[in-house]
Image 1: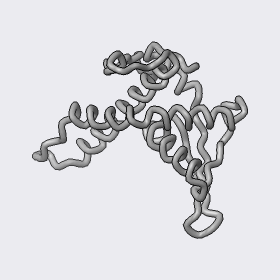
Image 2: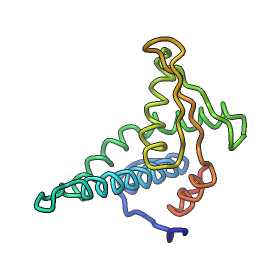
Image 3: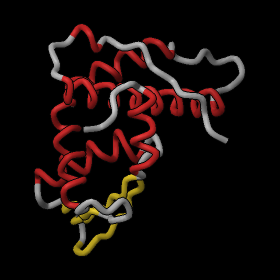
Image 4: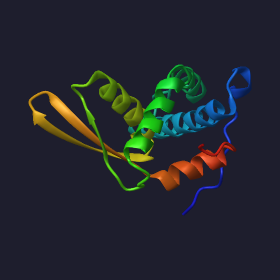
Length: 154
Protein backbone atom coordinates (compact mmCIF):
# COMPACT_ATOMS: atom_id res chain seq x y z
CA UNK A 1 0.00 0.00 0.00
CA UNK A 2 1.44 3.35 -0.99
CA UNK A 3 0.83 6.37 1.09
CA UNK A 4 -0.49 9.56 -0.46
CA UNK A 5 2.12 12.25 -1.10
CA UNK A 6 2.58 14.56 1.85
CA UNK A 7 4.06 18.01 1.77
CA UNK A 8 4.87 19.18 5.24
CA UNK A 9 4.37 22.83 6.05
CA UNK A 10 7.67 24.08 7.36
CA UNK A 11 9.61 27.21 8.04
CA UNK A 12 11.82 26.75 4.99
CA UNK A 13 10.98 30.22 3.75
CA UNK A 14 12.31 31.70 6.97
CA UNK A 15 15.85 30.56 6.17
CA UNK A 16 18.31 31.94 3.66
CA UNK A 17 19.04 28.67 1.86
CA UNK A 18 19.97 28.11 -1.74
CA UNK A 19 18.06 25.64 -3.90
CA UNK A 20 20.33 22.69 -3.02
CA UNK A 21 20.12 23.43 0.71
CA UNK A 22 16.36 23.85 0.43
CA UNK A 23 16.07 20.33 -1.06
CA UNK A 24 18.04 18.85 1.83
CA UNK A 25 16.16 20.94 4.39
CA UNK A 26 12.76 19.84 3.02
CA UNK A 27 13.90 16.21 3.05
CA UNK A 28 15.26 16.53 6.59
CA UNK A 29 11.98 18.12 7.75
CA UNK A 30 9.95 15.25 6.26
CA UNK A 31 12.26 12.59 7.71
CA UNK A 32 12.07 14.22 11.13
CA UNK A 33 8.30 14.40 11.02
CA UNK A 34 8.05 10.75 9.97
CA UNK A 35 10.31 9.77 12.86
CA UNK A 36 8.36 11.89 15.38
CA UNK A 37 5.03 10.44 14.23
CA UNK A 38 6.37 6.89 14.62
CA UNK A 39 7.72 7.69 18.09
CA UNK A 40 4.43 9.29 19.12
CA UNK A 41 2.51 6.23 17.92
CA UNK A 42 4.82 3.94 19.90
CA UNK A 43 4.33 6.08 23.00
CA UNK A 44 0.57 6.09 22.55
CA UNK A 45 0.46 2.31 22.17
CA UNK A 46 2.57 1.72 25.27
CA UNK A 47 1.04 4.43 27.50
CA UNK A 48 -1.62 3.53 30.04
CA UNK A 49 -5.12 4.58 28.94
CA UNK A 50 -5.32 7.37 31.51
CA UNK A 51 -1.85 8.82 30.74
CA UNK A 52 -1.77 12.02 28.69
CA UNK A 53 0.48 11.78 25.62
CA UNK A 54 3.03 14.58 25.13
CA UNK A 55 1.95 17.31 22.76
CA UNK A 56 2.90 16.03 19.30
CA UNK A 57 3.10 19.58 17.93
CA UNK A 58 5.58 20.65 20.59
CA UNK A 59 7.66 17.52 20.07
CA UNK A 60 7.72 18.16 16.31
CA UNK A 61 8.81 21.78 16.80
CA UNK A 62 11.64 20.76 19.11
CA UNK A 63 12.82 17.97 16.82
CA UNK A 64 12.63 20.20 13.72
CA UNK A 65 14.70 22.90 15.43
CA UNK A 66 17.35 20.32 16.26
CA UNK A 67 17.26 18.86 12.75
CA UNK A 68 17.68 22.28 11.15
CA UNK A 69 20.78 22.87 13.26
CA UNK A 70 22.13 19.60 11.84
CA UNK A 71 21.37 20.38 8.20
CA UNK A 72 25.02 20.79 7.18
CA UNK A 73 26.02 17.55 8.91
CA UNK A 74 23.07 15.69 7.32
CA UNK A 75 23.82 17.00 3.85
CA UNK A 76 27.52 16.22 4.16
CA UNK A 77 26.86 12.70 5.49
CA UNK A 78 24.29 11.92 2.79
CA UNK A 79 26.52 13.26 -0.01
CA UNK A 80 29.48 11.32 1.38
CA UNK A 81 27.43 8.13 1.62
CA UNK A 82 26.25 8.52 -1.97
CA UNK A 83 29.81 9.11 -3.17
CA UNK A 84 31.22 6.16 -1.20
CA UNK A 85 28.46 3.89 -2.55
CA UNK A 86 29.81 4.62 -6.03
CA UNK A 87 26.37 5.11 -7.52
CA UNK A 88 25.13 1.71 -6.43
CA UNK A 89 21.75 1.69 -4.73
CA UNK A 90 22.49 -1.61 -2.95
CA UNK A 91 25.92 -0.94 -1.47
CA UNK A 92 26.46 -0.93 2.27
CA UNK A 93 28.79 1.88 3.28
CA UNK A 94 31.01 1.24 6.32
CA UNK A 95 31.49 3.82 9.09
CA UNK A 96 34.22 3.23 11.66
CA UNK A 97 33.34 4.40 15.18
CA UNK A 98 37.03 4.97 15.95
CA UNK A 99 37.17 7.70 13.31
CA UNK A 100 35.35 10.79 14.69
CA UNK A 101 34.14 12.12 11.29
CA UNK A 102 32.79 8.68 10.31
CA UNK A 103 31.22 8.14 13.74
CA UNK A 104 29.48 11.54 13.54
CA UNK A 105 28.23 10.82 10.01
CA UNK A 106 26.89 7.43 11.10
CA UNK A 107 25.07 9.07 14.02
CA UNK A 108 23.34 11.57 11.72
CA UNK A 109 22.43 8.93 9.14
CA UNK A 110 21.05 6.55 11.76
CA UNK A 111 19.06 9.34 13.41
CA UNK A 112 17.46 10.69 10.24
CA UNK A 113 17.44 7.77 7.79
CA UNK A 114 17.52 4.50 9.71
CA UNK A 115 15.12 5.37 12.52
CA UNK A 116 12.27 6.43 10.19
CA UNK A 117 12.89 3.46 7.86
CA UNK A 118 14.70 4.99 4.87
CA UNK A 119 17.92 3.06 5.46
CA UNK A 120 19.21 -0.03 7.24
CA UNK A 121 22.20 -0.41 9.51
CA UNK A 122 24.20 -3.51 10.33
CA UNK A 123 26.81 -3.37 13.09
CA UNK A 124 30.01 -5.33 13.61
CA UNK A 125 32.36 -5.14 16.61
CA UNK A 126 35.86 -6.01 15.28
CA UNK A 127 37.40 -5.13 18.66
CA UNK A 128 35.73 -4.67 22.01
CA UNK A 129 34.10 -1.23 22.13
CA UNK A 130 34.96 -0.46 18.50
CA UNK A 131 32.15 -0.67 15.97
CA UNK A 132 31.73 -0.56 12.23
CA UNK A 133 28.28 0.52 11.07
CA UNK A 134 27.27 -0.61 7.59
CA UNK A 135 24.55 1.67 6.26
CA UNK A 136 22.47 0.99 3.17
CA UNK A 137 19.96 3.61 2.02
CA UNK A 138 16.69 2.77 0.30
CA UNK A 139 17.41 5.34 -2.42
CA UNK A 140 14.14 4.91 -4.37
CA UNK A 141 12.11 5.43 -1.19
CA UNK A 142 14.24 8.43 -0.16
CA UNK A 143 14.03 10.03 -3.62
CA UNK A 144 10.26 9.51 -3.60
CA UNK A 145 9.99 11.31 -0.25
CA UNK A 146 12.12 14.19 -1.53
CA UNK A 147 9.98 14.43 -4.67
CA UNK A 148 6.82 14.51 -2.53
CA UNK A 149 8.25 17.53 -0.74
CA UNK A 150 8.65 19.34 -4.05
CA UNK A 151 12.44 19.36 -3.83
CA UNK A 152 14.02 16.38 -5.60
CA UNK A 153 17.50 15.48 -4.41
CA UNK A 154 20.24 17.06 -6.52
